[in-house]
Image 1: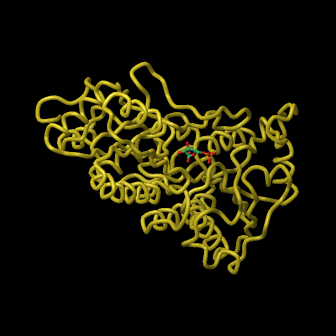
Image 2 (image 1 turned 90 degrees about the vertical axis):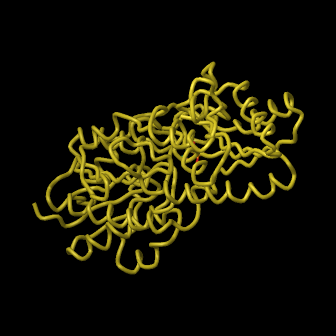
Length: 371
Ligand code: F6P
């Protein structure tokens, strides 16, 4: 079948590199004589038939821009749809038929959906309903098992690492314990890698349950060695040995129903109480999602965008582009959404961190020579 017109959307939380993918998709398609419609605000644009035509002028100059020119939403789920204000009694409904109608009316031959696990799960449902979709994996959390990297992660990691670097000098001057809280949901990649790259002292991640006692031991051990400050990097999803997480809010109807946050304040209060040392917290939050993508993310996003169009030209829909080593490959979307990629507590990365003296706030991990 000759491909004449494709659609593209960005859904879920934004991250640096979304515009670079949109540009990669549009430029390659336009060069092949294919028209490109950019649907607005994720799946909401398909429900409401709202789009903008992407021509070479629209996508010019967006490679380095953070955010997404198309807008995004992590509330617009066509299978459980309500965009009523928070707290409204409106019952969510299945409006997937409106999406099918938009695709048919606009004569869309294939759709590129750029998003994380929530977006890809919705995409899989539409694939099963016969919609030709190619997925592109996005998330700063880097928690999709089917790809070595999602774009956005490297940019978030560089923000987090810069923060670890910066809090070192102030922690040292004031002899304080500084706790940096990173994003990452149920995976500890941003916390672990920024802690390794920035030389943090204690790293709390969801994959290695922490205990208050082990955190205190690690700080006291540093004090005995004459270190008057400590840097803790805590992933927002860190869990204690009782399995408790710091949950800030529950959001009904969202593809991401739990908003995490508050681990740093919880740990700071505990340390101040037990050690009588001054603690300060830095919650990095959405700084990790904003701004210019790194060179790595621009490189990856551009390749992902171009390859998504290649797959459409080959009739290979139902697949997601992915990075394996340095190669761009494709994997069925259904396989991509089935498993989260999390840090291996016994893996080499954790052992390397232990080897250089990083504590994971757990007495169950680390032993002779750290490892
Ligand atoms: O999945 C990306 C992410 O930034 C997570 O790391 C974080 O928990 C969540 O999204 C925050 O979402 P929101 O922008 O809705 O607060």
